[in-house]
Length: 194
Image 1 (cartoon, rainbow, N blue to C red):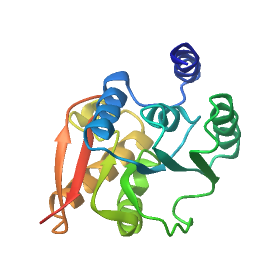
Image 2: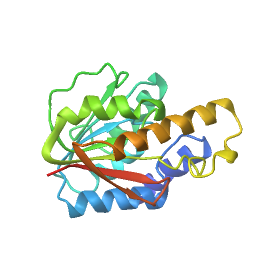
Image 3: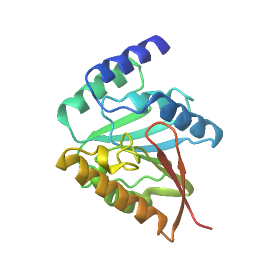
């Protein structure tokens, strides 16, 4: 299993498909283990790598993951089948902005279009269980958020602006308390304020 996973990871990296950095995914998996997380909603499946990795932590874990890109969805579906996880990972081919999900989850993991983080957070926080957590990846955007001079294209500058807006949204959110963890591409952990 580990070898199959390594192959999937290598293939994604070689094709520049955005998957979590090794220390980021290690931290996330450890968080799931330590907090006894059983139900996960993932926004942004890419090729299914993180969903598979999270599902492999425990046979009790069930995941719903959303991917809007048709080709990536197909590839993720094939990968989920290859790991025999179709009974525990439900993948939806849709834009997460338009998807309607009624279930509630222990953990919501946002790893999709950076420009929509606030929309995803607001929309899906309603699907979070009482003591649940929302984790968001890529808050450093490869160091560009900390050093904007590294953002050379207009697109990069636009995304940096949107990520900074999202961080400000988290910092000023009265309903949630957020901690930032400098692993991978920097992640945020948001829990409901008591």
